[in-house]
Image 1 (tube, one colour):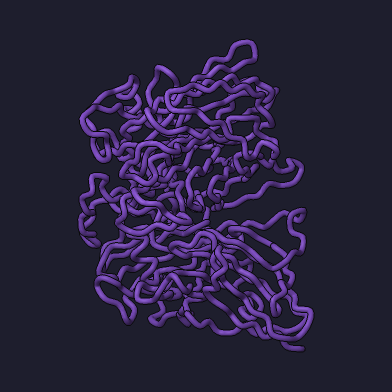
Image 2 (cartoon, helix red, strand yellow):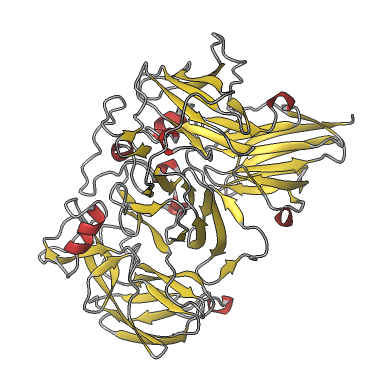
Length: 632
């Protein structure tokens, strides 16, 4: 309703007093969020004519009544300014006749990507538009795909925001030539505004910034609604300078194309598609995803970098209210922000899981304080108990590893012994919404799962439908609790009795607690100095890489002999087996985003010393795991 109201109020250009960062002594128009449903321009006899204008306006990413900031944005001539800019959408082969006007009194507009798409020779295309001038552009739309256009201003009036041009972008979609109508997909443009430059997209807490989807930040992003069995299609465009691992709760989705704004690579339809729950999208990149909701309830689609879903500092410069870790009315609404979208899947009847299934296994997962923490910088851990046993079942810590059997119903009593509320998200598991673990959100109207209060518990029930590598982590005050130590690998296997921890090896990457310099290291299996791996020549091993870090969405894992990469074979992504056509042996290197898991098969060919390294994208080694290979 907030999103719909915003569109109604912004249906004409509004003039209102300037606020944060506005030019003094004059009024400025209000910028509307753009849901990317309505293409811009006029299509006549195969020619799309569109007239774009660059203007300055006041943008309200937190809703119309919240403080605003002055940015530069695009509009169709005679219409409101929009963030993101007007959607350009045409069929392949359409001639585009664009007029771009720079209304600024000073500064030259540099426009990128308003040129044929789908052809790498046009990767660096730009057009310059002087202050007060209009530039005419003609080109023919190229190959079908998901693209975007963007702009920067050089020599203009300085503003108090270093990223005043960050919202100068818009989606550019080319549909197949034979499309009978515009497909029923949704276009989501990810943006990032910051008062200061963010080299490499690195985010610092309490710095005024906004991560947005189609011009709004959670909880003011659009709420999506679908029915069971719908085919849902998202085009995701990352116009920001940051990496975003986008995670869908409860369902796998197919990735059918990935692009860089110039070329969109469609995957061979004859080969089974990539099926994932988290897709890492780099800066200035795009991807197309499809999925089918088969369980009703509330679900999230969000970035899995915890710093990109923090509650947002007020744009008027006032500090964030102190965090209330215990007395929070709604954790999802009050303690999350940024790149989050809520999805409601509708059904005629809400199915409630039963408790009387035969053969249900019963576990207790206890969230409890660990040693070495303080109130400001807590130390927490998970302990796992099997059935009614009073003793933790070997409590393999760090990290906890939960082992479940495919197809066996399980009841996991989550017990909260922390001094604050918590919730557990079963990341990648296909289960009913009520048990998904998003505090005060999961479930359906009238049946919403609460946060687990201190000294309280919550019974989670599901039946894992597939074997694979998954993870668990909090979904209440996520950054604080996850960095305090509440993470674990979740392995689903065909037969737990046959599970061989010598040959089946989780490698869990997580953030150190805040008393450790997180800029220089990561934890591997919960340790700063992880234990060596002991392998034998000719034996087959499964390495399960689990990235449950709170930030660092670009870590690179390598398996090396001296300085040479060895060979491994990919077997699964996010718990889903990789199709044989895509599972050929390759060099042992993998870049990972938060919330991703990768499984690799390794058979050492010779004795000697190897090592697993975890590096930043810039090449800084953050962790090393020695690997000793011996003759049998």
